[in-house]
Length: 180
Image (tube, rainbow, N blue to C red; front, top):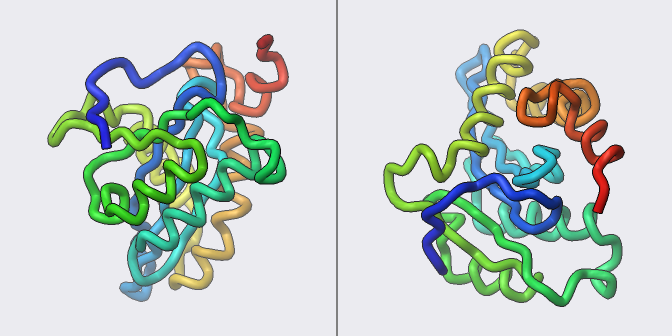
């Protein structure tokens, strides 16, 4: 696994994805854990996985597959050139099985340096936005209720939520107007 030490944003979609995880506290004391992939150009939250028992390597690998299928369709249509997969140093992200799995999907696993907020800034900005604009303003009675609402929240983020980096367009609006 290589260390990424530069600018996260890229000028073209599907060159680099970042992935991270976060937890949402529920009113009954339960926690819902969420991991996601985000395109480092168009800010689209491509895929996510969630559980009430933490982020496992298996959950993360499911997100990797869903990311590639969402962007490229069937496995046979996946690009032969590798796309970067940028993560922090969490155990599920740096596990040998996860790194090998990423390689099998034509993803090059990069990790950020320890305690480097600038290299994880895009993923951290997404987490702050998601917590502020979705989790903290909607009912979160228990884990199953949160897991059920995540599909709606991610869809809203991609279709409605404006981003200053995208000239105040949503990720889907930006992708629709993007020229390649």
